[in-house]
Image 1: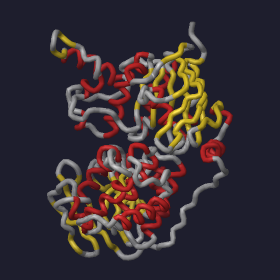
Image 2 (image 1 turned 90 degrees about the horizontal axis):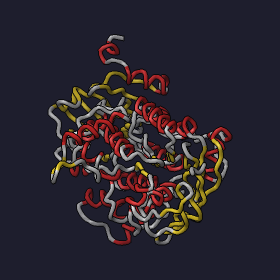
Image 3 (image 1 turned 180 degrees about the vertical axis):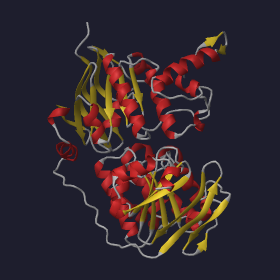
Image 4 (image 1 turned 90 degrees about the vertical axis):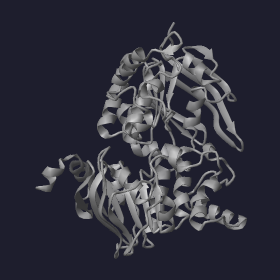
Length: 500
C-alpha cells in the first residue's frame, strides 16, 4: 500500500562537536511533490538532507520511507531505499570519464572487463534526460562547471530514485539550463518522483515548489503551501525578524585609473582584452557561460599564461609568472570553486583564513597576531561559529564562503578579482559579503566582479563590460545598467553589436 507521505522524519537530531546542527526535526514529504527546504546558511538544511542520504551513522530519531522504518546509516542503504542526493559541491571524480562517473557502482561488465559499448549507451540515455550532449568517454575534469553539474544530475537520475534531493542544483547553470532542469523536475513529478529542493534563489522556489519547510538554528519552524507565503514573509521566517530592502551605501566616488589591461590575449580563450578599473570602482563582467570570464580571471592573477598584452597596476607592468608573484604585487583572486580550488578542507578556519597572508609575507605571523587577525575578519564577516580551530568542513557553505573571502581580504589587496562571490549563499550572508566588497572599494581599492547573479552584478557594479566568445563586445554605464541591458548585450552577436 502506498502512503500519501513517501517520507517522514521524526525527532531527527545530529550533533557536531560543540554544535547541535539538527534539533529534533519532524518532517513529512508527500509523494510526487516538490518540497523546498528553506533557511539561512547554518540553519541545518544540508545536514538534515545528508542524514537522509546516509552520510552520517550517528544521528538519532527515525526515518520512514513509504510507511516503513528505514536505516540510513550509509549512502548505499539510502540508495537501496530509493533516495538520491545531488550535492551542492560536486562529487564527481575528475580523472574518470563521464560514463564511469554516471555509472559508478553499476558499470556493465563483460566477464572481468567493463563493457564500454553498454556503458556508453546507458550514459547517453542518462545524459539525454538533462539535455547534455557530451562524449561519455571524455574525462570529467575537461568539462565546464555547468556541464559537470548536469552530469551530477544525470548520475542521480540514472538510479531511478523515488526521492531525489537537490542541494543548490542551479548554482552553476545558465538561465536556459535552469529552464531545462525545471522541465526535468516536472517530468519527474509526473512519474511520481518526490523532489526535495534546497536553494537560496527564492524566485526558483516560488516557481517550482508545492510546499516549503523553513528551518532556523537547526529546528523546523513551519511547513506551508508555497502559494500561502510571499518572498518578504519567507525571508522573515528564515531569519526570525522583519527585514527591509538592503541598500548598499557607497561612500567613495571612483578616482584615477589604477588597474589597466592592454591587448591581453590567450589563444583559444580570449583575444585583445582591454579595460581599466579606477580607484574605488567595481567593474563587473557580464556574459553567458563559456564567454571566457573565468579564463580571463585566472590569467590576470597569474594562474594561467598568456601570449600577448600587458597588465598594469598604478602604471607598473606586473610580473605574472605565478600567482604567488601577483599576490605579492597586490592582486587577489576568489575562485568560483571553493571546494576544489579555494579552501583546504582538512584545515581549520584560522589556517585557511590566514594562508594567503602567510604566502604574501613569506613567513608566519606570531600566534597573537594570527589570533587577532582571525578575530578581526571573523567579526567583519560575521562568521558563525567564530571558532578558529574548527575544521572548515564543519561550517555551512555560506560560512565557508565567508572564510574564503576573508582569506583574500586578509592580504589587503589593491585589486580583488571575484568570481561568483556569493554562489550558494543565503540572503543574509550575501548582504554581509556585499558590504565587505563595498568597504574595500571605499578605501580606494579596485574590484573586478564576475557574477552570473544579474541582480548582484547590476547592484554592485559601477560599470559592466560584456564578454562573449572571448571578446569584450560592449560596456554599460551605471545610468543604463539593468538586468535586461546586461542579458540582451550578453546574448547578442559580437559582430552585430559592433555595428550598432
